[in-house]
Every structure is written in C-alpha cells, then in structure tokens.
Image 1: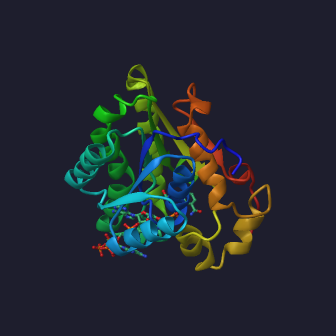
Image 2: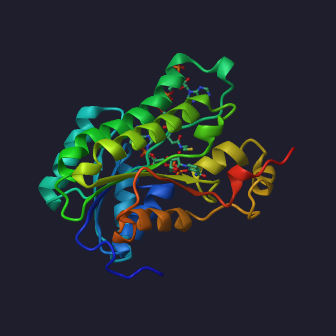
Length: 260
Ligand code: NAP
Ligand code: COA
C-alpha cells in the first residue's frame, strides 16, 4: 500500500455495489486505510460473502441489502449508516447494470432498467446522502463510477452510455450546487478492467477481448486496484480542491482508435 495507512481514518464510506468487482476493491482499499465501510447491493448472499472475506483479512464492514432503484431503500440504508456509524463522509455510486443489445432491439423496459440502476440510483444516493454529507467533519465526498463511453456514445449499450453521460452531468451540477456545503462531487472513468463482470460480458463473451486490449494505449486491461487508488485519492485530503472532475483511469483507451 503506497498511501499512508491512516489516510481515511475517521471516515464513513458507503459503496453501492460494494460487494463485487471494482466496488469490492474500493471497499477493501478504503477499509485498509482506516475508513468504516458500508456495502449496499441486492444480493444478501454476495454481501455476506464480501463481509466474511474482509473479516478474514481483519477488516470490518457492514452491509445493508439495497436495490438502488428504490429511493426508500436507499434512504433507509443511508439513515441506518449514520445511526450505526455516526456520519456519512464518502458516497461511492458504483452499482450498475449493463448488457449488450443493439438499440433497435432494446425493449423500453431494458432501457428503463439500466437508466434506473445507473442514473436514477446515483441521484437517489446523492439526494438522500446530502444532508449528512454536508455535516461531514472532513467535507463530504461523492464519487460516481462512469465511463468515457458515456461521452463518445456506446454502440449496443445506448442505455448505459446515456445513463453514464447523465451521471457526469449530474455530478458537475452538484459540484456547483453543493460546493458551498464543502461537498466535492467527482466521477471516475475506468477503462476495461480485468477480472470484472463488465469485461467478461462486454468483451470476453463477445469475442472482442484482444481487440479491446489493443485499443488501450498501454496495451493491457486495467487492474481493479488502479481504480481503487483513484477512488482513494479523490476521497482523501490529497484532493480537497478537486471537484466537478471526471478522472479518466483508462490506460489511454479513449484517445486511441484502432480499426478492426
Ligand atoms: P459488477 O461486478 O457487475 O458490479 C456491479 C455491482 O452493482 C454488483 O455488486 C451488483 O450487486 C450491484 N448492483 C447491480 N444492480 C444493482 C441494484 N439495482 N441495486 C444495488 N446494487 C446493484 O461491475 P463492475 O464491472 O465491477 O463495475 C463497477 C462499476 O464500474 C460500474 O459502475 C461500471 O459501469 C463501471 N465500469 C466498469 C468497467 C469494467 O471494465 N468493469 C469499465 C468502466 C466502468 P448485486 O447484483 O448483488 O446487486
Ligand atoms: N438483451 C436484451 N434485453 C435484456 C437483456 C439482454 N442481454 N438482459 C435483460 N434485458 C431486458 C429484459 O428482457 C427486460 O426487459 P423486458 O421486460 O422488456 O423483457 C429488462 O431488460 C429487465 O430485465 P430483468 O432481467 O427483469 O432485470 P433485472 O432487474 O433482474 O436485472 C439487469 C437487471 C438486466 C441489468 C441485470 O443484467 C443485472 O442485474 N445486472 C447487474 C450486474 C451487471 O450488469 N454488471 C455489468 C456491469 S458493466
């Protein structure tokens, strides 16, 4: 670990989708740096497994079963977090849903489902978290995980692209609206990250793994830890003047065009 071991000491962090993939890496990394972490997602089994895996490493976490598409559930999870741990200092909107589907075949419910999880779920977290984040002794921090494909457009994933673009816009609006409350609002745009469901679904199962790898300037998929490190930086006192930023951590993927 290259950060000071107490970098996030005294902070309470809520991570949606915190029991798997990139979210779990962020949860573990925050906990190693002294934060108290709360994991929120749908599957109780996955939540229990993640808490147990962290306990085996000597890390504590609590978990609240939450579907981010339901405002009341999100609000209840945030209220329970503050009741049990005393504050909410960091909110990481990481939960997402996605599948590959040409837009001409995408059903209205398929569109709505992804926009509900990604964009509406992020708004719900921000909205319900605001009154606690503004009371944070460290200054509140919101980090949402998006992708540059939201800005470029994303053939066969129009729902996720539109939702992620919406999250970037929402984050920039909130950075200004809530700057006076000392809440910083940023996004992280990962490139393709190895050992995640995202890469498995979008590139491995579609036979595009090698092509996608070649399309990064650095010639490789990212590591989950490389995204977690960016999330640590943004949440810490190293980034107290950073707000409204979209931090691209993609190995130069968005700059590179490679024809098939
Ligand atoms: P993942 O493994 O599929 O994790 C998604 C998480 O979201 C799961 O823990 C899932 O848990 C949770 N989730 C899904 N629907 C939910 C809902 N309705 N309510 C609450 N939680 C829900 O994804 P990942 O690949 O680690 O991606 C994490 C984030 O990074 C996402 O925002 C993704 O768009 C972004 N991203 C990923 C990549 C990549 O290469 N993987 C690249 C760019 C951006 P349950 O199923 O238990 O609810
Ligand atoms: N292609 C086309 N449509 C699809 C689809 C696919 N691969 N997968 C789901 N849909 C459609 C369904 O048909 C349904 O629409 P319909 O009612 O018109 O038939 C709609 O999407 C909702 O699907 P459902 O399975 O009921 O949703 P859910 O709430 O159980 O699950 C998902 C949400 C679909 C996003 C599911 O993939 C999920 O839970 N994902 C979480 C993890 C994830 O996606 N990680 C990747 C991150 S990059």
